[in-house]
Each structure stands twice: as C-alpha cells, then as structure tokens.
Length: 268
Image 1: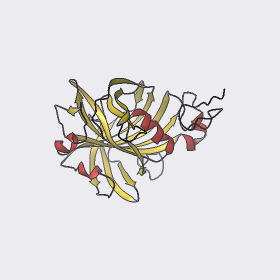
Image 2: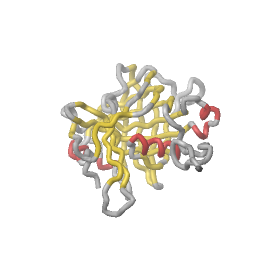
Image 3: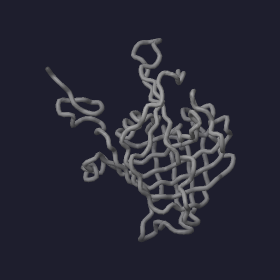
Image 4: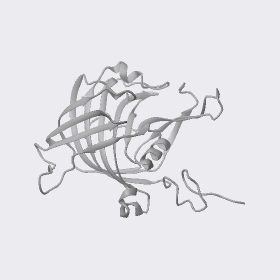
C-alpha cells in the first residue's frame, strides 16, 4: 500500500516537500507595535458569535509589524535563511468569551508562503503582502534601541499601500502594550467541498505561546496612517485616538492550541 508523508500539503513519499514541518515552531523577532482606539462598532463587526466586545477599552487596536526568523524544533531552517526569514504586519483587537478576555488577529499579511500555511493552521487570516520596517543596529546610521530612536514601517498588498507608521522611542517600558497581551481566540474555517453544505471545519480555538522570552520593551509615540484599498478593509479600523507605540525583541515557541467549541460561529 502506498503511503504519503508530510505535516501539510504537498504530501509525498518522503515528506520533504511539505510546505511546513510539524510543531513546535520557534520564532525570534523584532516587534514594532502601534496601539490606538477606533470606533468599537468597527471592532464588533469583526467578532463572530459567540465572541463579544471586551468590557474595558473595547475599541483598542494594535497594529504590529514583525521581522521574524523562524524554524522547526531542529533549527535547520536558520542555516537556509530563505526558509526561516519573513515579515508580517497584523491588526489585533480584544474580545470576550465566557467572561475571559482574549486577543484576536482580525487582519494579517505576510511575505512568505510557509507563513501563510502556518497561519491557516492556527486560525490567523493570513494573506500575502509587502512588509518593511527599520532594523536597529549598533553601528552606522541605523537607529539604536534608545531614547529618541526613530523606526519606520510600511504595509502594502495587491500593489496598494495599506498602512505606514513612524515610531519614536521615549523610554524603557514595563510592558509591550495591552491589546496583544492575552491568549488568542481564533476560528479555523474550511468550506465544505459540496455546495450548500456550509463549513466542513468550524472551530473556535485558544492559542498562545508555549514558551516566551523578551528583551526590554521601549515605549514612545507613533505617527500612523491607514489607507483605503479596493480589496482590503484595514482602514475601517480608523484611528480615533493614539495610545502608544512599542519596540521589543522576543523569542517565542508555538506548539498547538486548545479547542473551545465547534460548529457555532455562524460564518458564511
């Protein structure tokens, strides 16, 4: 009997061609986070049942740029950097489920196919995009991580710029913000192959880091602009009031999630 191997498509006789390896997945990254407040109604429209708005600060949003190096448990991808390096930008809101506050990624763009596949498995709504951010460096003209340092970040998709930010660091911080500080509440959706049969996969899951370490967070101010685009809706989360901006270097391990419930989202 013929068998095929691999954690994800394509599955082959050896499994070498699989787009992503099995977890755990390990990450090292530089995160640039801009928090602000929008109309809570714009957050509510992105929360399918049974999720509800967070009780406190329901309109809070975090727009995060991340420059990642990632790998499987053995770390071999780090020595073939095209398989480990990628960038992403994502919008996070907070929500409530059964009295507990969660973070939820409502939009996200990445620049590598393996990052798209991992995200679909985890319930992140990933799409391809073009993401760039200033990298710190201790020599030359690049900014150091210090008071007064300025970092730029841009996001585009389908040839349209969606967001741009300039962050100026002010001082060390006790946190890296509050919007993305909870376990994630995500949906994993897959339409049935038969017309009219709804969803073949409909799961609300909880996900978070199995292990985490991070450097000193820095806080500052941001100049953030969002732009309209024909096939994107990030600009609906319009900036009403800035909160703060943050910079932090982190290390994370992801190793699975937990099913909260299935078949009740009402997604179409």
